[in-house]
Length: 340
Image (cartoon, rainbow, N blue to C red; front, side, top):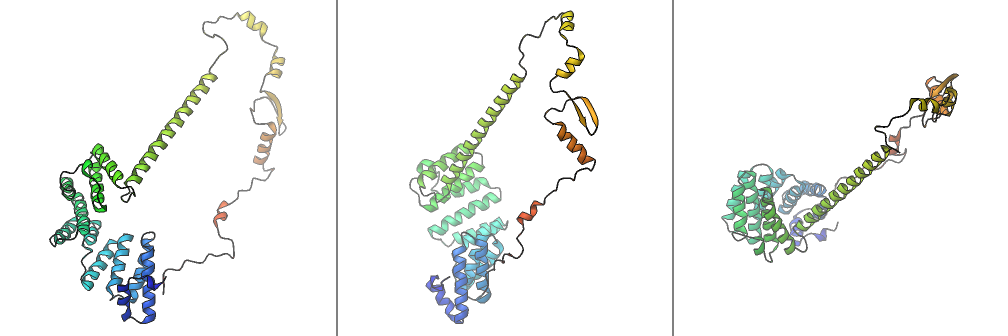
């Protein structure tokens, strides 16, 4: 981690620290910034480590607040970002603070913060963020119609998918939120038209809408394949069941001469000897004259009887859980948490 990767303004703020301490804080801040998207929890640990050494520097408190927001610790995020605003005079995180109130299930507070920020005529980018939070807070309160009005006004009033045109990222995010609201309200057809228009206007898929459509198409194809496979299996089972019930000739209404049956029946001793699947067997000194063992041989049964009588040792049951244990003398070192 190179401290020179920090913004020049942050490095200037760290000059009031001892040089060695400033270097350590800078390294933690660089690590926090690099891990923010992929490992926000670890980024938060680094930011906290920097705060432990330099809690009176506004940029450090900002880093903790942003990392906590990404990691889902909204109470700490709000606390740190308010501290940053007091120390620096920068109020650019008002939409984030309002969103933290939403996450903490305080939508009324979120709306209050939004209205306070709107009264100061914020810039275009912050305005988009504030409108998104406002619409979300209205939905949290069950005011779906009011949420739709907020987004429609932000999109220019009475928006349609055809009027989306070539929007910037802010407009795409507003349109995505509006499509999601329509879908949640049960207007799935209109929501689908909006999603299609957003995907067409967002070739780089910055909103993630195209990926959403790809996932849905993949799920539909998988469901179709599973249905076809099930149908083929059922058809095969039905065919095999029908073949098993097939007969060589008519059975119903057949009259057979009893004398003919008597003549065709072989002598008892011949019938018993020639009957398929039936054989005389001797197991453990006991003879079974009419034993029909199917696919199991007499030797198999004799071995099982011997085991039950204790004449052979039982099979050894192996503990496979040992395969998941570390070999002796190969301890894996614990991963060190971010320390000085």
